[in-house]
Image (spheres, rainbow, N blue to C red):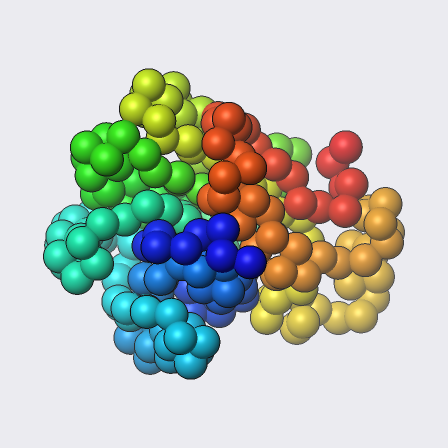
Amino acid sequence: MSVLANQVAVVTGAGRGIGRAIALKFASAGADVVCVSRTQENSEKVANEIRATGRKAWAHAVDVADAKGVAAAGEAIAGETGRIDILVNNAGVTRDGLLMRMSEEDWDTVLNTNLRGAFSFTKAFSRSFIKQRSGRIISIASVIGLIGNPGQANYAASKAALIGFTKSVARELASRGITVNAIAPGFIETDMTAALDQKVRDELVKKIPLNRLGQADDVAEVALFLAGPGARYITGQVLTVDGGMVM
């Protein structure tokens, strides 16, 4: 299946988990992929996996919370690839803690990475999307941005704001043929959930009608759909990938 043939995608947070799954999924669909993560080692590792499939890949180490660093990376990426067709804002962090004990540093770290990072990367490529009169922007939000969660006020705020950002940018760019959507994953099998106590995992699963945690590939499949031709008339939407948890 080459639904993304001759397209170039940028995926932030591509070094592991959902970001890695999306980068590999896009490559399997014919795209060349720019892998962005905090470390060159992680970016290069996934880029090499993509190159092994015969697709082109570029690796960039970028702190998405650094607006100037993102702007510089955006220029470098555009110069290397010639054009960008798809942007996936996936990079994110957590710094959990009850509100009364949460430090300003933990609040700022989460908001700057999860929200400012998406803003900076979207801004960096929006001008070229407008000139092309085409483009797909996909941001990875969370069901926590829809329902909240004790101990995650910073994370919930960042993901809820990302949803509002998505809808506003969708309205701004729609007239130029650019779609902007978000995916809100539920509880997905990642390094974080793998480290949880079995009792905690069992409690999480009880909240999910499909009775299991999701896989990173479940999110990647939806990202592929939103990036492909079948989603050309979909914009400003939030698709939950959560096993029915927040239905």
